[in-house]
Length: 382
Ligand SMILES: [Zn+2]
Ligand SMILES: [Zn+2]
Image (tube, rainbow, N blue to C red; front, side, top):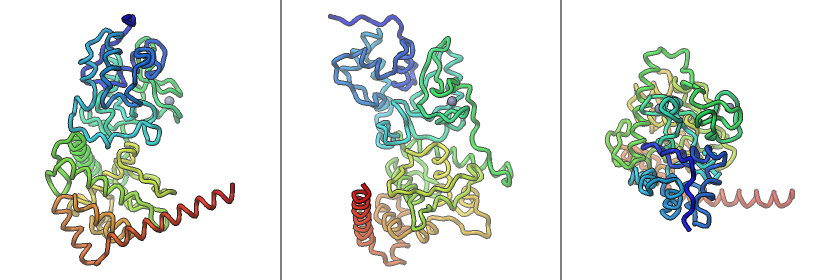
């Protein structure tokens, strides 16, 4: 028996995120996107929490027939179909362990939402799923929470005369919740702030290219393979955010005029925070630091907010000032870095004569000992 088609079914926009289209359709029936998927395809093995990347064809064709649309149209919304070389492991996790809450990732552009609204209905475009700082169409900061309240829940699509993306806590349409980015440092001349902004937007644009599998320009190095760009960013973010003896991190030394007065990063666990799991503002802070580490002295000082009398926060500064296990990790991982950077790490390696593998195995043993003591402590206390 053929399942009955649903009476109302908005058409997906050509550049729309699949989960946005599902959530908009679900809002017409006042159900959630996952409830809608159960209704559309009862008994079919579902794709999992995140249909955006690649949708199971059986589920897609069942949904297509009930929503009166061609299966290929909705299959083409999948991110892997749109960008076959997408670095999937760089998408923020939606399984409840990372930053993203719910099926839809939460870094939207309010101008894109407003344009969609003016044109019929607000929706989230495919780029919303990428861990970017900016919308590159509007050069505007991405937002990941409602500034009208302090929300506890993920935003949702709701029917308010027409479909809107709203804050689940206070109900404000997010296209109208305008935030134009952090206030730049007051002691920094406007021309410097705007130059720093150009560097950050350019970096985020190159990061976007690398995410999509295209060669990208790394500051201070030039064009590199997508994989090399992502590896350097992963390793430098990890080094900047790593806890040290005083539970502080190297990232706290940076005070870019674009994101001044960021609270200190003081991790209380050894758990890693990958770049893609940071909020857009924290990503901007780390990205400014990465640009500063790799660029020439003038750009480095601009991006790090360091005055001429203070240290130049270069890659060499990082290598000399991080805990030994971080230095050893950088030495080990730099074999996958572009040659000009690898040479700089090798110079540090030979100057210090460090045995990276030995340091890392000592560090792993120490961590295992700590974990063991912690589990004993918990079992004693109860
Ligand atoms: Zn936009
Ligand atoms: Zn709100």
